[in-house]
Image (cartoon, rainbow, N blue to C red):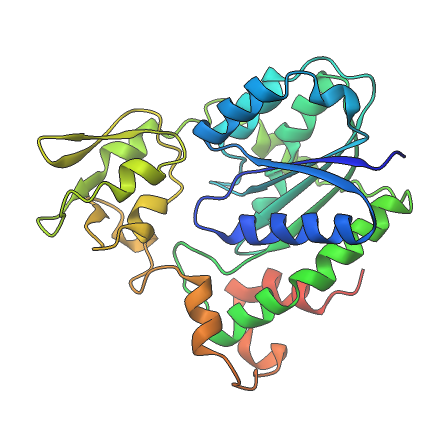
Length: 295
């Protein structure tokens, strides 16, 4: 395999970006040339215009994305569908979730790999990585730090596997394939309709500037939501005044927000509890397995 890697990712609230940056560093340390870009609309459009023939020079494609509702974000499928037919370029698919490789998350790569293979890309490796969850159930700081600290080791293991020619494809139960068939409609237009703005909004425009789909605009001094929302939660957690909220579905949103940089600051110089102690209960089965696994 040659030494040019195309690293494509999407990250809503920062977790997948942290992993993508680590992949970039790992490949560079092994003397590989990495071209990295995000699937956020503005960056993607600029990149596409500047690098029309880039794929012809690539020896490997590495795709990373967070799991949304047991699937990949719609923009991942849009990107794959825009690709030219490949001459068997190898591809790696890395999904990122808060729960690990547990059902029904196991269906999150099925349709992505099918889309790649339809375009004649050779998917040689797939894997799940885990970051602190940004919905439903918050993880305590000890679990979060275990997940953050293990990123370099996990990434380096994957990179070594890839460069050594190790193939990894998941054997899935038939029920997972049936579950993946339910994802004919991956758009989350309805999600934006459940978003609303509090009176605490100062019309600073942060949400408009940072929406990865450019789905917001200011109308009469208030953010207005379009129909391209992918439910990434960036506007909810990123708003400086916590002014954006879900009219229905507050149970999805973490009360204290989502800030992995803040976790690292709070936990600086604090000894971590053992994994077996801080990863208790059914909700953490996948996380515990991920942190303890060696392969």
